Image (cartoon, rainbow, N blue to C red):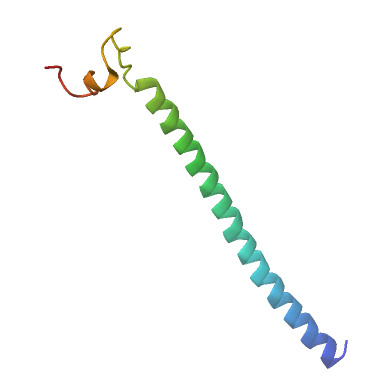
Length: 74
């Protein structure tokens, strides 16, 4: 192996280490994003299950006269 080959080998090994580190960071980011997605999905399902049901408007009463959620009727 001549000096040029040794230099190229050294450069390729260094590049390989850099790429391995970049891959590890990317894999960690994908893992974190997957966990965040699962958490947000669970929160959305939980919120949908606990959302209060509002009564249907009374016949003949305009919708704008209906009480809003969280407020008492007059």
